[in-house]
Image (cartoon, rainbow, N blue to C red; front, side, top):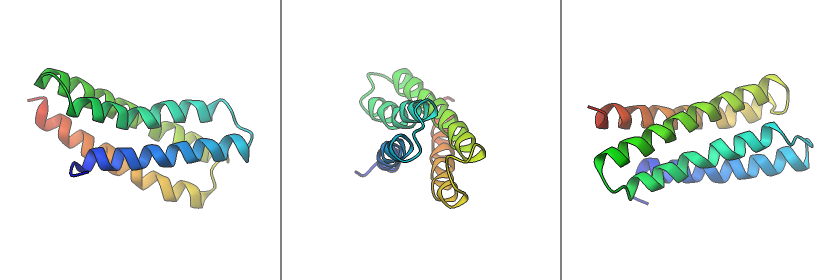
Length: 114
């Protein structure tokens, strides 16, 4: 993939699916894990849809939705840490990645929303 946000959001979605598996299998957590699975995989799905958008407005809308999903995913990651479903090490492994994705999406949205 040549597109950095498409590449990073897809790789992040893979991590989120694995996190979901870990939370449900090892931690027996089924509510928060469903939330993070939905929002965390939605980022890449919306980015992918934006790439094939029918117009600039469609692209902007999908990228803004991806940003909202990324912000929500960051919330679930912080909540999982504060409730001890994620260790400090696990949190420190995934948190910078979502922050980077958010920063890229903010930049894209600022440039395209003009």
